[in-house]
Amino acid sequence: MSSADDLIDNNNQEETPSSSSSKRPRLSEEEEEERGGDDDDDESVSIDLDSLDRESLMALLTQISASQNIPLSVLLQSLNQQPFDDDDDDDEDIEYPFGTVPTNLQQVAEFIQSDQCQRILVLAGAGMSVAAGIPDYRSENGFYATLSAHQLTATPQQQAAIQQDKTFALDQHLFLENPLPCLELKRDFILGVHEQRWKPTLAHRFCALLAQQHSHKLVRWYTQNIDGLEDLSTLGEKVVHVHGTMSQADCAHCGARQDTAAFHQHVKTHIKDVTGHDPTAPTTSQPMRCSHCHQPGVKPAIVLFRSSLPKVFFERLPQDLPDIDLLLILGTSLRVAPANSIVWRVPSTCLRVVINREPVGQHLGIRHSNSRRDFHAAGDCEHVVLELMEHLGWLSLLEDCVDDLPPSSAQLLRDKLNEKKQQQSQECGKQ
Ligand SMILES: [Zn+2]
Image (cartoon, rainbow, N blue to C red; front, side, top):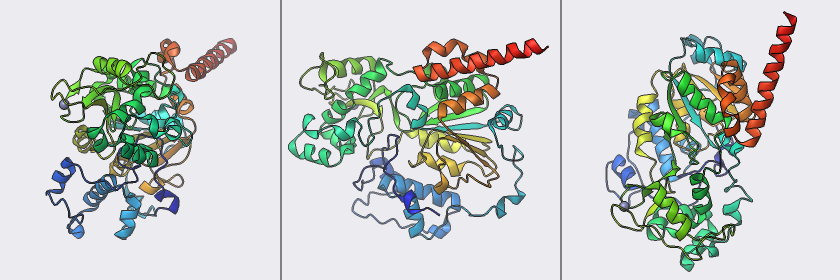
């Protein structure tokens, strides 16, 4: 069961639409619908928990956890539920498609290439974009923390609420009233994404190559990142942006997709720069009106706090989960529900490979020792995926993209390619 540390859930790096607001959110309309009623003032849910199987119960709890901002572990404790067995006894009869759990990346690569591995899911988080050099907006000393709310265009009451909790600037309900704090806060990030200021990392290349080399095996790449570094022109529907993406725009009122180029132009010329870096920025802000409903609610197509996740997540995931043989967990703290529910919703025969500096996901049932199905490839995301790609024989496929990588990743790849060449020439010399 979870330790006390697991309950402290607010320090993750991913954009966290539902979990880091300190306010207890009301359910959105869609979630009210899913609850099957308009019992606005009744916070209690009457469900016969004993009538639910484990999977349904966990799905329900995950949903409540996300929408009500209550850590899953707290809900489980309150129900006296143990989400995951603490011993391996039940696993003894299971025949795993990978045989015994890998102990190194070469064995992971061999499984990926084997006929036993037919269906792969990727679950990715902020760790895979770190090497891209995106500023750490959300850390203790990051932009959001150091910004004074009084710089934002808002009423004194709104400024006071934002000053108390910066994530309130990204709140759906505030946005509908006044979209400017969100747009001003996100201006630099929106323009950076539009200008392609940040380049895809080796981890992004790895997922793209997985889609290219094993198109039928890669079922889906679920990403919690909103930086838009996935190449959608080649990946298309293989990618699900669980928390939306900065690279598109939509309307907070009617949901209509907006012209992205027009939105970026508007942000550049009509939203003031609170970072003080852009001398060409205007000194006052104007919201952008929707091309469909004409309300002033155009925003980056990200999931704001207290709003629902994209429908596509709830539609695709149940279809994608059956018969998954391999779940690759890339650079995520696994702190954010409901994306993290993928970890325990994949079949019990699925190999789960965690590529992350620290061991994560113990509160979701991942075991980092004595596991028959979990392997932790510890280390920096870029280093680990590069080694994995080497074992997959993909290094030559990366040669052309060296100059399109972030500087540190490019150097890493150059060193690896040189090392490989030296090895090869030494081998030739011996023969
Ligand atoms: Zn609209």
